[in-house]
Amino acid sequence: MSEPQEAPLSLYHLLDPEVLANPYPLYRRLREESPVHWDPYLHAWVVTRYPDVVEVLHHFHADRTPSPERLEQLGMGEITPIAALMVDQMLFLDPPKHGRVRRLASVAFTPRRVAVLREHIATIAAALVEDLVGAESFDVMEAIANPLPAIVTAEMLGVPTSDHELLKGWSQDFAEMLGNFQHNPGRARKTLQTVAEMTAYFHEAVARQASHPTEGLVNALATAEVDGDRLSEHEVVANVIVTMIGGQETTTNLIGNGLLSLLRHPGELRKLREQPALIGPAVEELLRYESPSQHTARIAPPGAVLGDTPIPEGAAVIAVMGAANRDPERFEDPDLLDVGRADNRHLAFGWAAHFCFGAPLARLEGQLALSTLLGRFKELSLASDDVRWRPNLGLRGLTELRVAAR
Ligand code: HEM
Image (cartoon, rainbow, N blue to C red; front, side, top):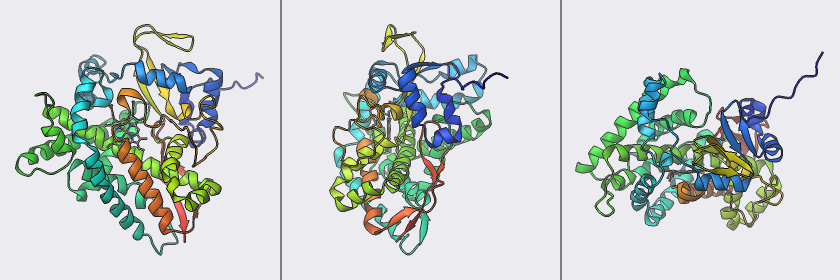
């Protein structure tokens, strides 16, 4: 009988729940054995080293969603409403279109606005945590990691916070498509319904601004003007939606993964409890260590070379930030969690032109959620070692995180 063959190297192994629970050995193999890897299953190049991920994020094209016309040609016309939304979102635009949308959006998302939100986040986090006092154990995802970013997102957009569960449902549903490589025709119907509902909701929110202007991103995007240039209503809605989704799933993952990492490293948790001022660098380390968004994709420009490997023009490239953030050539002892780590220029928020638009807000939410929890409960521990990872290959997060509290 022939020896069983080792499965070929592929990012698709993330479909195996054991690999998903701990993808770092797979990432190490990729970095060491084939850092610029042609993945025959994904039909894409996969890069895992820090400098290659930076190069891809810096210089490759972000325009990667198939146009509605292309989908029609491929016989996938049914899903064109999804593509029609994505082609106008800043995440998928190249210059000069990207710069235009990002500039107009930045006018809407000022440091003053983030400072106002800070107060609200602290109040919301305190209220959510206060509700848990007296419980012997609770699920951190349900109690804080899901609702906090959803309520903050509603505030940020300027829509009623009582709608936060609606926003969360849409965001969770859309994220299942965004974070996974595998096309799941069974989910397409649900995603189409989500796209129709949230598009209608935000068109209404834009229309309401004329009679009842509310401070927030919807209003700011609808009225933002730079040198006489304004966004169309479709562009406003598309970019409100990308911000609504970008702001929720990842921040939920930061809070859940962050607390899990601390509970798995009691020495680091103790250090943070003793020195609460470490919360800033600690959140950066938690972002590096268990990155909420593990990878993203780009398209190769003409003449691209990664390492020594020429990449054909138009090829899809997957940049694995989660692997680059554990690259030993860039980070000393990368598999060690060190809440006081210096020189921590991780890639969890991406790099260059598409660097996360909401990073200041995400940092605040992560810092306030964790410090409020640690401040209110003198003892927190994992109620079970069996934590549940959501079945999403790109958005790394937990479905449940049950902790015992005192
Ligand atoms: C811990 C939380 C977060 C993480 C880890 C995260 C991660 C990322 C990453 C990796 C990118 C770049 C993707 C790429 O280059 O392909 C990105 C872009 C983006 N993020 Fe975040 N994000 C977080 C929170 C937020 C929040 C709170 C908001 C909303 C206020 C937000 C809105 C966006 C938007 C709109 C973009 C697109 C920027 C552009 O294309 O120019 N994100 N984020």
